[in-house]
Length: 393
Ligand SMILES: Cc1cc2nc3c(=O)[nH]c(=O)nc-3n(C[C@H](O)[C@H](O)[C@H](O)COP(=O)(O)OP(=O)(O)OC[C@H]3O[C@@H](n4cnc5c(N)ncnc54)[C@H](O)[C@@H]3O)c2cc1C
Image 1 (cartoon, rainbow, N blue to C red):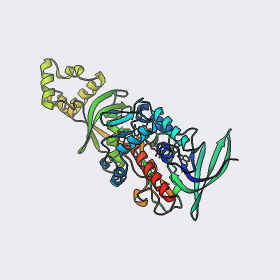
Image 2: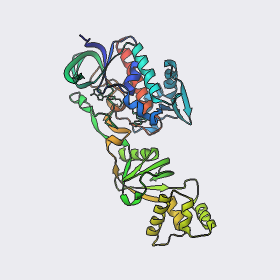
Image 3: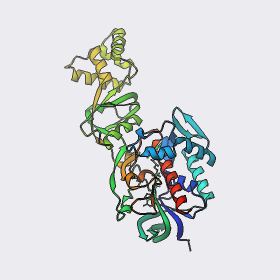
Image 4: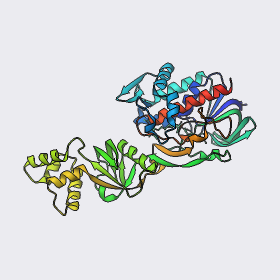
């Protein structure tokens, strides 16, 4: 008969939960994970390399400026120190930090080993469905699957940590767990996600990757953009998509692509003129053939058939794409929405339900690409670990 009484039950076995379990010492802890293994999403991060933090992490990368207090208490420096103490060698690439192995599974292996050393009971294929409070204790109820058979379970504890992430990628929306707690829950919407665009602007470009910059009003992002049948993707696009999730942009807004961000309009005109031939043919030596064709077609359309060097240069520097929406959750890296930080204390313990903690993406905190989202998973898990330690002291 398996034990069903713990000091702490953690719902979700992702990045935040594993980090918490690596930090929590001297307590009996169970992790309930809905899928067949813990840390699945972690394995997909940073294209399998896991960009686990960013040395320039500040609140400006997030949707909620209140994260600054949590980051001040435990930011990238403390995280890197603790990861190295757990035995994870790190590598810095520009401002981004990766495991030295550049292999996300190394991060998950190190965290799982630390959790194991702390005696954490990890239960996969356990879906939490309900949190019931009885005075100072809780029962977490749910359904477990074993050998194809489903059974109900109930686990008693003094503290519950909700670390069930978001619906992004193959994740689950478990915000229903907060029904009855009195918490304000903002429904999830994709934040770092491909943008759907008008078809004409991306016609014929599906599968082409370009290094360029994107602007949306004052916001500018440089990097690789991947063209798709119905829109654009890639890191620069994801960071622009956050503007839509944060309500600073809306459907119908225009994103301008600068296909040659390191050259001025005048330099481009001079380059085209120096080729000596037809201005449109010069594009073939500057871009992927399908990009060249699209720029020429666009210049001809926008400048009444006059695709001369100047009009081509204008189109190259300001190629307009109309955004028709964000892709759905399955294609998003991160979701905006969840539980408001304002209803939690400095240790991420609920102000409405003592003993209930939250960590990671379940909270309404989302960051840009570059290691900020995982940093929030580590920072929030550390805050919870301190809160739990204080509760039992
Ligand atoms: C493709 C991809 C690449 C990314 N790359 C990066 C990157 O390089 N750097 C970065 O900073 N961020 C990256 N992110 C974002 C980052 O992965 C997330 O922000 C982070 O994993 C959130 O951690 P979490 O613990 O809150 O949630 P998760 O890691 O999603 O874990 C939540 C867990 O809870 C489980 N769960 C949900 N509901 C229940 C329930 N009711 N009962 C039991 N279990 C449940 C889920 O199965 C899941 O395992 C990436 C995301 C994706 C999808």
